[in-house]
Image (cartoon, rainbow, N blue to C red):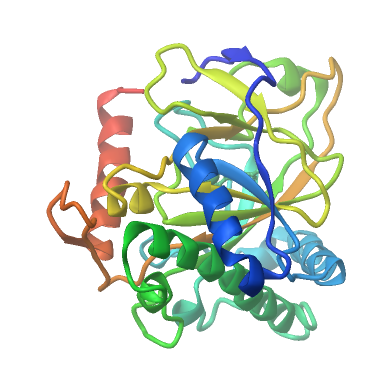
Length: 319
Ligand SMILES: O=C(O)CCC(=O)C(=O)O
Ligand SMILES: [Fe+2]
């Protein structure tokens, strides 16, 4: 998975319009189900988050990452709680080198002492909390369609991702991929984000036009992966199914590999920003599929198992 691999644009990433949701629920649920069972990736339009709100979140994120390193370092990543700032600290089993990026994680119940002060960055906290809530609403809408199709009560996943509970662990992640000089850009072992699947139920990704690089590999077990570019479109949300929902659906919904490659321009590469919202079920939610394919497990134990497996893979040299 560390190699550059074959690239093709043969796989279409479905674009699904959520507008007029209540009246069109059945039709939308069909489209989401087909995309999630076949490709594992889809894009959303008509989702109700205004372009100005998305732009405001990107501006606030840029302002955060422009703070001096010494200020950002006051809010360091707390791995166990998935909050705070890291830089070049994420190593993937697929590449074994640190992703060339910095990120800042927001997980509502655990932010004490981790917000930059109003003097350091006025308005940041309010913009981000608002954006987190709006992203959550879109995520829950999509998950309610999967609940219908899986035979769960419609609000089943909304209750499992309840932000009012201390066990809430959905996360908004701000991502800044560094500019690369020509040497780094052509170095095959320099990765923006190495190939991985997400651990959560559903990921919502906001990208900027002209700042591409996300590639997906539909078909989880391919020995020879074929990578498809996901073109960024402003205002469109790119979604993927994560491992937690794959397990919860008895493997019917597909969590697929994806990565962020530096574009092969032959020269230096500009920086890139993206925003990801991870719908990750509350720690005490019990993951149990309708057909009982896997034994029940809490979301906390599930995630811990995944994190441990990643560390083990890094330690024993498996890719
Ligand atoms: O920045 C991107 O386009 C993708 C990020 C991603 O896959 C992740 O953070 O899990
Ligand atoms: Fe991801």
